[in-house]
Image (cartoon, rainbow, N blue to C red; front, side):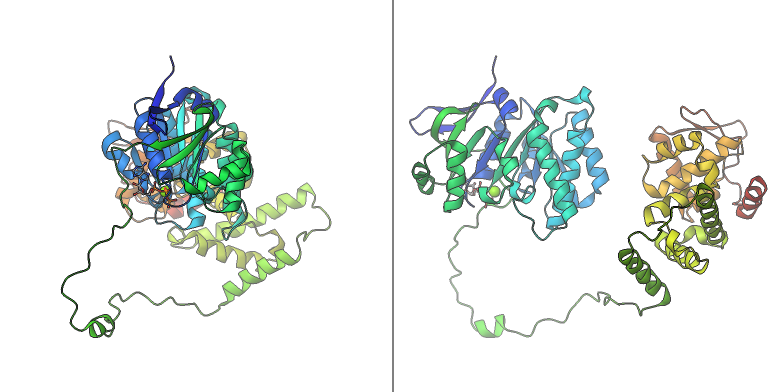
Amino acid sequence: MTVSIEIGQVNSGGPAVLDLEELLATRLLVQGNSGSGKSHLLRRLLEQSAPWVQQAIIDPEGDFVTLAEHFGHLVINAEDHTERALQVAGERARQHRVSAVLNLEGLDAENQMRRAAAFLDGMFNTARDHWYPMLVVVDEAQLFAPAVAGEVSDEARKLSLGAMTNLMCRGRKRGLAGIIATQRLAKLAKNVAAEASNFLMGRTFLDIDMARAADLLGMERRQAEAFRDLERGQFMALGPALSRRPLGMRIGPTQTHPRSGTPKLMPLPEAALEDARAVILAEPPPETSNRPQRRTPAPDLLSQLMAAKSAAIEAAPEPEATPLSDEEITQRRERLDRILTAILAEPDAGFRAIGVLYQEFVVRCRIEGLAAAVPDMTEFRRMLTHARAGLTAEMAADTAWQDVTLRASILPEDMQGVFMVIARAAKEGWPCPGDAALARAYGTHSLRRARRLLTYIEEQGLIVCQTDGAGRRIVTLVELAWATAPGDPNAPDDAPLEDERRAASA
Ligand SMILES: Nc1ncnc2c1ncn2[C@@H]1O[C@H](COP(=O)(O)OP(=O)(O)OP(=O)(O)O)[C@@H](O)[C@H]1O
Ligand SMILES: [Mg+2]
């Protein structure tokens, strides 16, 4: 049995059908100038196929969020989520087979690219068990797979282009069928366009786009001139899921509508404004918001040092001519550890922002003549997580601890330290740290937040929390089966004591 949907009427009369199963294998490219009816076409296709197949829509303008009302698509407002969260969301959407609209409205080009890439990447990299067929519609595809470098960073472009290439070139095996629409074929990366075997060509004015469309369709360029005369909603179709020969068709109506239609002409108000000049050009009202003026901080020692550091790195990409011996590396690591421990021993260090801690760390390293060995921010974060859990570099190199670190990495960065603190207590058989100690490891004074955090980590399947008869808490690490001794959740945070213990065990 084949599943076909009706997308409209062919010019000679009769239904224009699209073979969905064939489409899954052969992908679709839609092109047409602004207003030619591409988004309408995509909407018709999505509505008709919604009962048959899971869908995801990459929606730069937020046009498709209205599908949610009739068809139950989950609307994901990309603005509200990190790239990591969107990647996971992409994966989960496939696991749970939920149709979704990724609304990228309101983001700048760079962030649209990054977040779309993250979401696509999540869908692409889902485990084999979940490779069910799915339509992935990308409207304004030239934004995500541009033919030439634009103003966005190289990294964003690479991520986004990579995700689009994966979708169109390697998606089929994984059940992903790419459907992409663009205003300007010439602006779309060639390799992405070339992977579609089905085409729907709408009204096109520019010669360069017409020429590329003719090439893709295998038509004479002169024949392609006809694209100029197409009306809104009319398309020329070709491809295994559509028609073996170029076939003119008109796209049918849709049940849902874009949030904002084309502005309609409205009669002007009857009564003319009495004094247009006075009203339109009246003094602007005073700025109401007392937005804080952006202050540039006076250049201070720290920022100068930071600047000097990056300049030095740029100027001398390989600061070390002779490689260090293992012993020297160990020594150096120990010195860096000592510097970090000293910083963390300061009262309130637990509540300082990581950027501030890093700056201080950089300065102290320079003072100790370790400028060339200053780790970058990523490495510093890792050191900090370990240090907060009282792990020495030597212990951290232990395979059991590497396993713990790996598990911790599924948590948001700021929670990893808390997990490590618990893991340390469990490994050593110490009493479970109290809420106050956990709060400090998280950099907060709120005990409630510390408890919520524990629940969260438990929900992620990393730990199991139990309470003994005396109301003391026991935390067991999942799989490793290390368990803390029972500890009083209300125990005061005895940071100094802990430091002593560290000193003793070091
Ligand atoms: N087949 C159709 N039947 C009825 N109305 C249509 C049809 N196609 C398009 N329209 C209407 O024409 C207008 C423009 O269509 P649409 O938004 O789909 O254009 P587009 O090609 O996506 O343009 P852009 O590239 O600027 O996004 C919309 O108001 C849409 O509802
Ligand atoms: Mg559109």
